[in-house]
Image 1 (cartoon, rainbow, N blue to C red):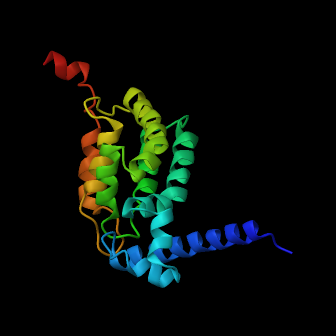
Image 2: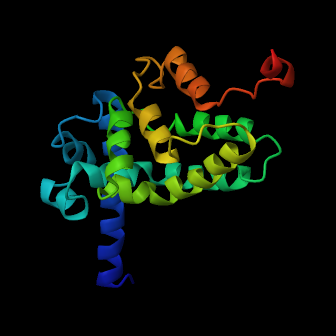
Image 3: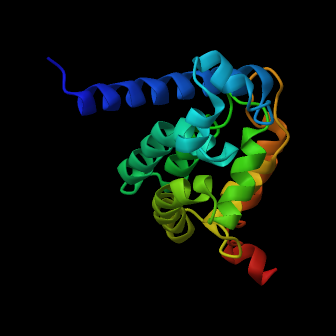
Amino acid sequence: MTAPNQALRADAARNVDAILTAAAEVFGELGADAPLDEIPRRAGVGRATMHRRFPTREHLFAAILRSQVDTLVDAAEARTGAEDPWGALLEWIGAYEEIGAPYRGMSARLSAALLEQASPVGELCAPMRTAFDVLFRRAQDLARVRRDISSADVLAIISALPRDPETGRARTAHLTVVLDGLRRPAPESARSLTE
């Protein structure tokens, strides 16, 4: 026989799963500014049930994005010793581009959260920012990445780029301009210096 507390915990866990599934669907269909009332309706729970666990839209975003952020932390850590630091940086940024892609308007929210840091999404992203910073600094040291910009600035800029309506990713031309702008020019040759 199941104890009453166990049954309550199982019900609560099912409610959380239903809310997050519904939230991912709603934000995927209607974007990050979707009406929140649609989420408990689809989840089959009351509004109060959702708000007890997820008091704000930001709390829902953080819960939905958690596994992707954890994957990005692991991806950054796995690339810190790569022989090609620039290639490692580009690979990681490509993976980062996927985080908000399914939800229209989410990338702009990420951009703000990365700079604010005090919101639920900002707190969620703190380990990711730290792991990316290590990768970014290594690229600055070994791959001629400019030093007058921080890793957090790079993430915020990429997140704020206009999105392709089909894929949700930054438009290729815009992302290319940003990435090209990260590289310091190669040192002039000794010949050009003496001319």
